[in-house]
Length: 264
Image (cartoon, rainbow, N blue to C red; front, side):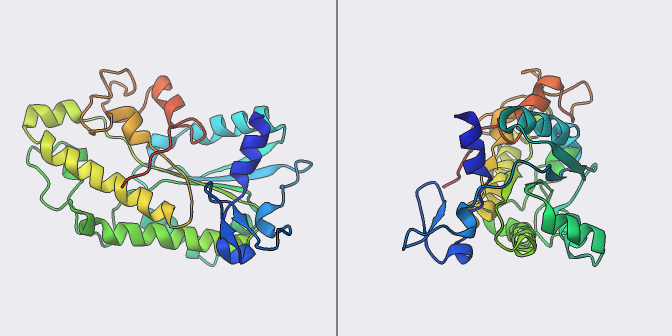
């Protein structure tokens, strides 16, 4: 049963691939009921490729998820880990648009993608970084429209991936970002603004993915609670540096295990 659920999740659901409707689970279906590219089970006789884009919060997660896939599906997984400290979504897009033939071939051939990047350099009018760096003054620009540029970059990323995959069975998973500085916000008296800023930030991540029926693992909620105001350090999910996950926190970040969360 777990293998079946994973294979169903692996099928990416793009109306353009089938010309049909989508089910309540987002699976593309043909009006005539005939098989389409979106309903073909990927072969398990050959290794699958996992392309993992993340900032430093996702270091080690790609290998852990590959191991989980291998255990549940019985297929070897080759990991292409692009985790990088402070990785902006705009940098991911630049790489995907690069004319590097090796990378373009990888994108076209890989079955699984995970996308996680921050709003830097995306043209967003937001100062949510104040809630990351520990600056003791609250952010002032954190409404939905302030993240429009970031959301647009994420949409472009998904479009490039799906275009390169040409409607082949594909799994794309998004991650939102946790923040381990809630206790610092409280000490600085900026918790109200930073909680609201983080909610707007994660909502933009989810909205972009939802346009393509891509599930988003609600890492921020798992670490910080539904109000984005719980101290992940006190939960043992953040290490002594106040920024990066412990082993327990890393297990929460696994895209197949973190809870899905849809913002209204």
